Length: 389
Image 1: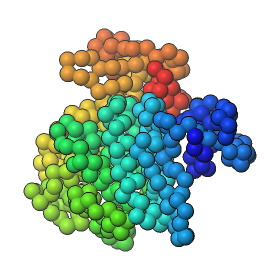
Image 2: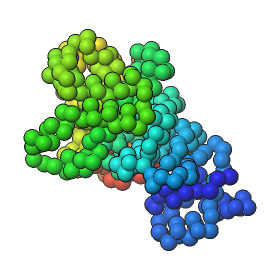
Image 3: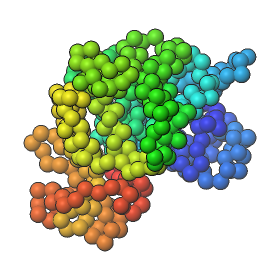
């Protein structure tokens, strides 16, 4: 058994594992929600432990160090791989959020490379286990910061498309790492940018245009020596016609991986809500990208990405002809009907037992695409649907 740390326990969130005392006696079962801070403090003072197999925490005990900086370790296997992927997405988001906090506090030293690689491995494994559930979770997340979900959704789309391309695992790992770190130079200013409603000033524009270079420099300063990872970060805002930045390269000078990253980055940025604006519907974001094919984006890779997502990706909420509200469960396979499940009745109330619907029948034809914000108790309904159905 291993003792639990404060950073691993979150108020108002279900426990990802059962907790035991030092003698192995059960204290709290997996899924229990701790909602009172003093209960959490009491639990930690008493000592709470988890079984070391197969679930452990993303952040484990800091290593002793005479420096004022905190070193911590991360294991790819530490994320709860036995949980449904939809539930695992929350752990991925929490891990990336903590990584950002450590980056801003400059408490990573040379651990950054291994941490990001482990996180990237976890995203790749989740895609292999259930890509549809992972896409749904990131499309539906309204709790995590914009930059966390934008990077994770972009990473998932990049990995799915890269698999479809037949790229080897080492190349896909570099792509995933670049997806998760492409904007780290913006972290100190991200909250302000998310809230800002007026146009960027000259200083902000300069910051934006240099952030790919500065992000790569931060990675190198923290021990990253993968040349592909670093170059992908530098190129992720370049565009085929030379109108991108920071160097304005074009055509074949732009790495194929960077072209894929540019598509995933742009799509994720458009569909992920910020405090200052709603996210676009996936079909609208894909249309906007497609209208710029062959000028800004690689047309072949764009077609591949659209195929990997579909215009109604998992997690899309739709209204049916009979006024039920349903969700797209998975991307349709060739020759098979769309997997559509009714979650809300005609009066807008959640259905306790979701019902499979056939979109080809008149009563269940899709008449509108909705936002999750339009659905009552959507976060709870979605989590229950994907983790218990």
